[in-house]
Length: 187
Ligand code: IMP
Image (cartoon, rainbow, N blue to C red; front, top):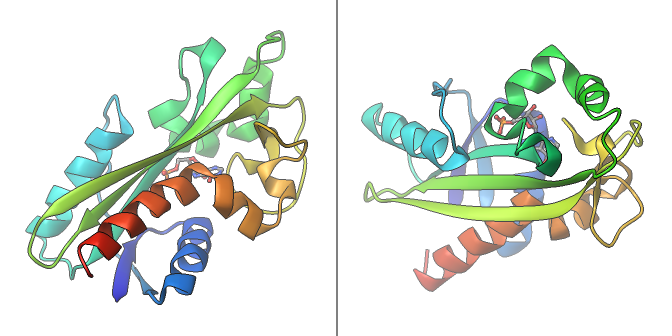
């Protein structure tokens, strides 16, 4: 089926398209500016977005994606504020916050929201655990990819080929759950 992707983030478009393509699904990017509420969880942001998009009669099926990086020693910061932190102090600024912190455990989380033509909404979650390194490494990916090494790897997300990131990433895992759901529904 053709799925509308509501995002202005080109990195997400590339990743989601590459994950969906082998399953015969096509993706169109919708240039709709979905308002983002200030919330404590990614799930709340996605719920609000789906309700808003449904209210606007945005063509379905559509997907929205909210993601963030959660640093354990910072009590999950930047988490749901990842975009704001990225656009203000950037990944380098986050590295400065962690300068004297030895325990660098962190995880990426992604919540995908799906709105179907019948008006029902569904959420799919994916997580990828790893650690924040001390410097930026790699040219691939986007956002915080150059400072994050997933567990079991010695390269950052930005150093991994896209297929490898998609296989283990928070977004890849959330999408596997979404794909299982739509195939079960025969969509
Ligand atoms: P949002 O989901 O668009 O609100 O993204 C939150 C922030 O996290 C943005 O700065 C993104 O660039 C960043 N981000 C989202 N997904 C990823 C990812 O897969 N890798 C690295 N950074 C990401």
